[in-house]
Image (cartoon, rainbow, N blue to C red; front, side, top):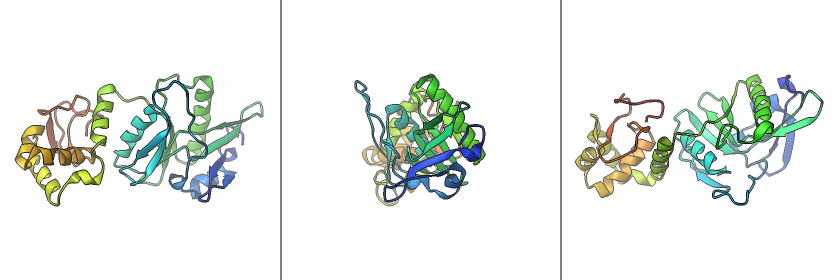
Length: 254
């Protein structure tokens, strides 16, 4: 399991009954459904930090995902809303390898995401670019190499812009199916925004705002409607249909 030879990385994970398994990484990546496994080790609790380990309810899978920090929760939000993501898991695998001096090294990426094409992402969610120090940066290189050998990707995910993160947090509060409301309400909402218009105008056109607003935010979370999420949400922000390319929309739009 020498870094520099992808076939020599090894994977450690828990099987469905909680028994630890170790096998060649290339075999595990092909055969193991990591998205269905529990964390191979618990997220650490760091005294003094405002945010600690917890669970994120995934709208993509309808199941909880273990999260270790606020930075990870925010990245989970973004991936949970990505239409190309089919499943998520927290810390499901530990990678082992030997450094050039023959010493065994290991790393547990914080996050696993499966994509519609069957490939996957292993990721860490640092709160700032240098988080974790040299050990984390060195492990990132090794894990990226391991992922490359199986056609996956590894990334240290860049923290989201504050405005985009705040908007996603707001919309995430409406991600559960119950916020779609009564039968027919989503259709009325989509019809009201068939042409781009201010949020409050379309909402009032669809009915009582108290009833309709949760359905509007639910549709925004699920990308049935779209807007520019790089600017603060407010009652006059323009909303449009799924494929609308509105003014000022960027990579954070949707």
